[in-house]
Amino acid sequence: MQSMDYGLTEEQKNLARMAREFAERYIKPVRAELDRESRYPREIIQKMGEQGFFELFVPPEYGGQGLSVLNVCLVMEHLSIVDGGTAISYGVTGLGAIPLILFGNEDQKRRYLPPLARGEYQAAFALTEPWAGSDASNIKTTAVKKGDRYILNGQKKFITNGGEAQFYIVIAATQPDRGVRGLSAFIVEKDFPGFRVGRAEDKMGIRASVQREIFFDDVEVPEENLLGREGQGFKVAMMTLDRSRPIVGAQALGIAQGAFEEAVKYAKQREQFGSPIISFQAIQFMLADMAIQIEAARALVYSVAQFIDSGAKNISKAAAMAKTFASDVAMRVTTDAVQVFGGYGYMREFPVEKYMRDAKITQIYEGTNQIQRLVIARALMREF
Image 1 (cartoon, rainbow, N blue to C red):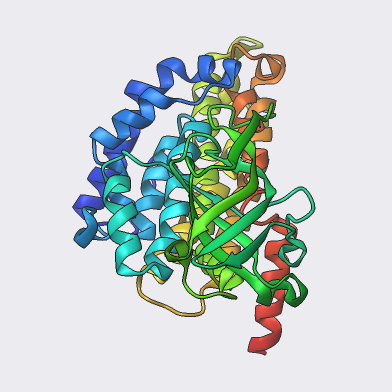
Image 2: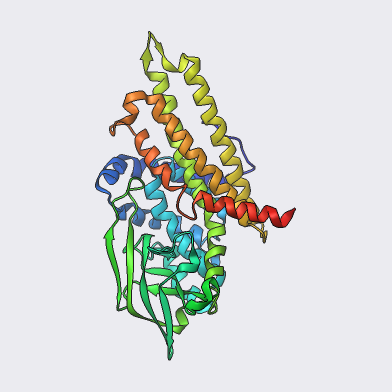
């Protein structure tokens, strides 16, 4: 599908093309296998590192190309056109890099960002717990200061890249009685004694990514691994999510685009009553609506990414809008793509059922769309 130009530079257009070509060459031949086996694409992630994809998360002074939310969105979109699971396995390392860039001191950045840029380190972001998803004030994981160390105890749930990442940004309570004001952020390495991971979750979609529980049993974290100051953990989390939500929007956009392309190709090939089904007005209207929704989502995701890259301060509402709209579009478009395929769309030998399964999670993680609407509504109440 030919989309509008959106004022992208030649470098950005080439970046999008490179991501799509990479996905077609390396991911598409194995995506069904990765999905069926629920297997983390370790070799593909390594090849992404070799080709410089992880440099997009890191400023030039630490070996990267400079964090641009729009550039990351372009890559996420075009990887997700082929496979949203592999795309998020890549993208969540950026979720671990953002807090370091925003709140890390020079020593922390020098230690963790260069190997991340080279693809040698994967990262993860550990906020969600069995008792605390949307409600961050209910975090039970604790960090108790003892001398020059913090002792972490607790567990996290649904952590993407759990067990694969070399380091984790962990949000824990240093002052549990203060709610969100008592949260702090820590850099926890996977080989710290007492850190362990649980089994991989058996998921409906994005099965090429891995989500695990992680556990902290008296994990000793050096005080130099405190990210920012004590009590800043909630701020670290929210400012990170404000920048990552449009990236999830881009993932959703790519999933919708991939399903749409499959639906158009199928509608041109499938004949009923002596004609390709794309000649029937009912199918034409469905495809037209899908195209409208995708282009509207793309316009919003790109413009919000550019807004964030401009250095704007109040970005929460816009970020929530991009994530919510694009993920809702992905669910509608993929459902309609299955409908275009009819009975074949329900079968695993055709790719659209996978797109539909992959789309659903984009309405849930990085904050459910119901939470996003609360963020938007509260911003509106302050503005008017």
